[in-house]
Amino acid sequence: MKNWEFGKVTGSEIAIDERLSDMMGIVEGGCVYSTLFEYNDDGPKKYEIILSMYPQENYRTLTNITLYMKDVPGASAQAAHFLGDRGINILNSISLDGISDTIIIWKVLADLSFAGEMDILMERFTALKESDDPSVSLIDHIEMKPADIGRVFRTDAGKSKTELRRGAPVTLKDGKYDMSKEYGDILGNIDGKNILLVADIGSWIMSATFFKDTTSLRKIDVEIPDCPGSIAQALEWIASKNINLISVFSKVKICYQTMSLELVADFANCTLTEEQFGKEMGEAFEKLNGIFTVKRFEELK
Image (tube, rainbow, N blue to C red; front, top):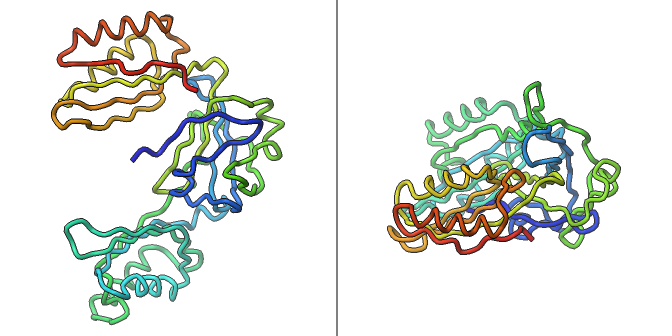
């Protein structure tokens, strides 16, 4: 699943891609909490804003819980009762059918709050299952792990970014997040700037990355053979031209024959003109093993 999109700032607003916002639970009219980071001098990034529906002080108690349940009426209700009766608040969640199976998988972001540690909760569930308690008869098993959303705030020595400010919640209006009130004094005039929106699906957070003025983003779409080593050949040639890849997305078009490779790259340190790059890339691809075709090469708009 492609979990990022590129866009541009309009005035002081970021248009949150609807597909990504739906996945992340960042909804129209909801309060968005944010934190602004600044990157060091290395690389193409300048600033990053972490967006979340949850206050930063709640991050330490957020937990990913996956419940595997029988595909029968009442299973989800029983699972919700098991968590709710123990003071666990279900936040964002998604359920899906187990392929070729008779189970339902429910992935939950939950706030343990004062419910205790994960191992205590697992011990209680195990004890109930071993005693054939009817309160968990429709739940096959449970997996838990820390959401670890707080990792985005770890900016110890040696890290590439520094936390600048934690903003007050801002209401999402018309699908847009306005940065002017919380960060306008730092970001300055950012109208028309390129941004990269990335959804952290496992943690239900999103980041908006701003690039430096010296960054020169290009989009490259190529078709390559669907065989081992073809992606490596294409990326090795691009790397040899001192081009820094920002994103890579590949997908099979015809199995064992053709696949597409969509790239966004920083050309700040590449001396080739657009015409030279297209010509040399085409010539280089002709020498590779298989059919490599440049489909698109353009400035990111």
